[in-house]
Image 1 (cartoon, rainbow, N blue to C red):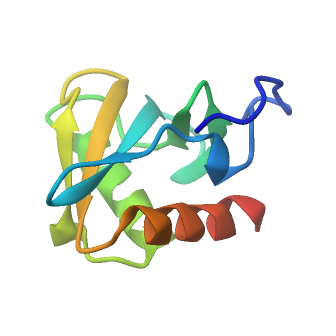
Image 2: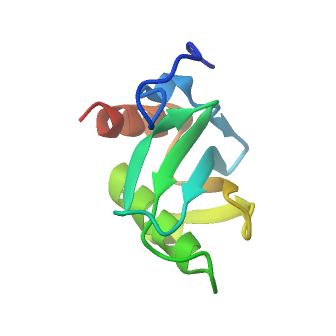
Length: 116
């Protein structure tokens, strides 16, 4: 479900409804666009259906991936053990799988985080 293509600042869209979330039998899939070596570990918005996440870690030896999982875990208030990189382990564009929450819960929690 995508709403609008207009961007607001560098972060782009700020609504979780603009994310291209999907689910399979066991998890919710979140498309992510990562900016390694950023100024802070944070969700910075949404653009083109993907959640934008900046991390201070470099993209070496899985450091940025670990930081992405931590940022998402904090935002979703869900254990890190329930999150995993499904695709894009060595790319800026990733898909993160979240188990233990349904699609509506993930969208609501991200919406709350993006609007704060």
